[in-house]
Length: 162
Image (cartoon, rainbow, N blue to C red; front, side, top):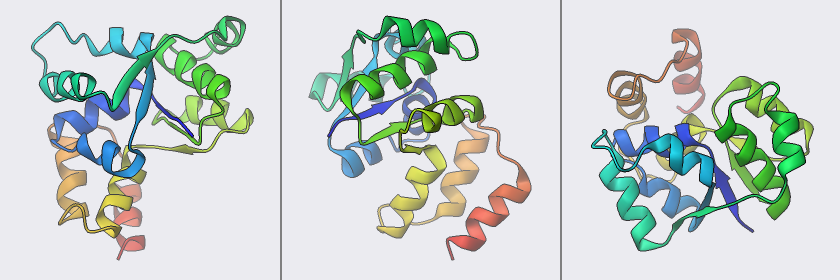
């Protein structure tokens, strides 16, 4: 079954040097065309080289969604990348949709989709011993990528992860 990702997942993992976790955990990841546009791959931005490599290697693929009415409906509350990612996940009967934004996660779940985010991917990687330190990865995510996480949530994640 396919996996569909939104911009923030791909971008944040690429910025902290862990985009390969997507390939390790899911083998192949599909992103809607809106995500490719939001990543601005023609610019020299942090992580873009790794994203271009993933596309060139073929495990990260862009695909158009045919679910235009669903995209239009979701666009009332969400941005284009999130809307297209959710619609593409519905269209492909995706095993997972990878989203970080709260409203997007709520919308995806309401459509019966399974959702995880960048922190969930890092937790799984740590449990599988793919990264040496969850604390360091979360710190990089916050410092290098500017990812916003509540301090209390970070401590809860680290405590629950052991």
